[in-house]
Amino acid sequence: MKIEDAWIDDPTLRGELEPPMLCIRVDELPGVTIEPEDFAGGWTVGKYGPFVKYTQRDHPKQPLSPVSAGDFNIRFRRRLPPVVDLQLFVGEGEENQHDGFSLPLSRARQLVRKHDPSWRLLLSDREAQAGSIAWMPVQSNPGCRHWLDTEACMGKPTSTIRVNDLDVPLCSTHLTEHNAKFAAKRAAKAAS
Image (cartoon, rainbow, N blue to C red; front, side):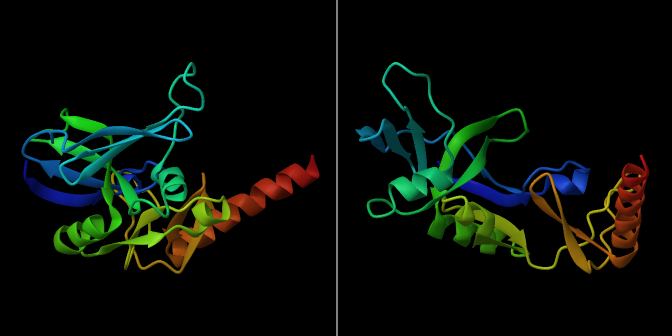
């Protein structure tokens, strides 16, 4: 198995309000290098080439609980290196996408520096406030993400706004429009 490419997918560039995600393309699906092992608390962790796969069960008879790299990093903070969740693509085409893979932080940062240097992996302050340890992709010099007819504005941002738990950079023109729209909504609500 060989890592062929790495990039950060930023859905806000398509007008979708979702967080950016590390994506990695490999030539073939990685095989098991360290068999999945059970840990206390219902955790199962295995190694697949450089990648890590983990799951967590609250109780043996309950279905798998949704957990993230932030949960993993808290649970295994003294035992295993921190990981970053990602989307794994095998070969060409978007249909060969695989969820559930993570990569150790040091290797993920190395790939981001090499393949998509306008991004960095930084500790998420919001995740830390929620009691989790997660590294998120952050663009060094983002452009305005106000969605126009077919693309994002990409002008120089002056501020960020919080939409659906996501920081969205806006230029001065679109920040003024945003503020005016919400001021009108507040005034209409106060009048009723």
